[in-house]
Image 1 (spheres, protein in one colour):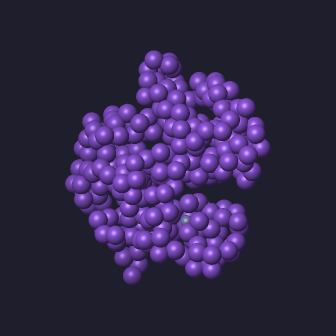
Image 2 (cartoon, chains in turn orange, cyan):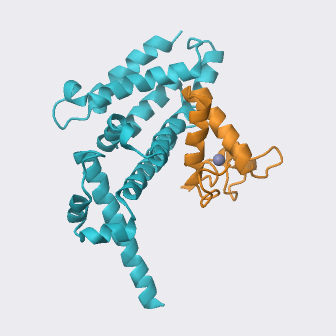
Image 3 (cartoon, chains in turn cyan, yellow):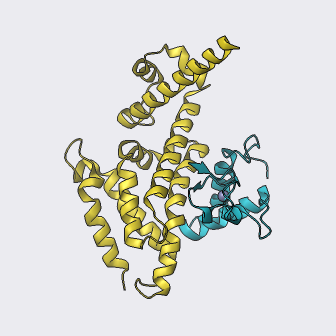
Length: 84
Length: 197
Ligand SMILES: [Zn+2]
């Protein structure tokens, strides 16, 4: 099963891939309107916002969790989690 | 070249066996209490071999939580069909967790011993289910079939209920019995009754 290199979401159906294109390595949530992949900063903001909205986290705690999660994903591996 | 790839293969296999042993030991003995020497013994390798693959015990535990997070997220994703209802997703969540209950229960009970990296693995599991659930809730809330409420409160009420049963399995289930298998269907039914319009 393919997983999004940017956020880790499993991708099994075409509509989950960026632009519905199953050859892409990133998902629909990690794509910009033009189909290119969001930057680290963009993804960090949207992932933290998602955690705040769905799990009720404090904003700073959500940002810290998002950084740790992203640090293990292929698109962002090697980037130290204290960098922004 | 051939010797190189054989060595790599053997190394990967040892890592795999170690991960499997660590899964079992952390689940059985606890995240804080499980000993790397016992993990090595279960895997049938020397104690030193553990640290060839994982520089420290923390690294091993992080790898285990990471693997659990990935597996649970995938399982929930597989069980969550496109257009699944809120009730079906709650059932999928219970089933997905039940398959990994012993180790997941340790994460619930011992989250404070985890490093920030490992803790984010727990958040990743919650994000996997909330991703599916938030869409279904938005849909059904708009259709008027479930009550309107902030999503994070709906979600945390559900997680709180599940985790209470998981963390107190000794009170709610017979020894060795899965608390989610025993009480999962009743918890889904009860929670559904609270949120439906
Ligand atoms: Zn993604």
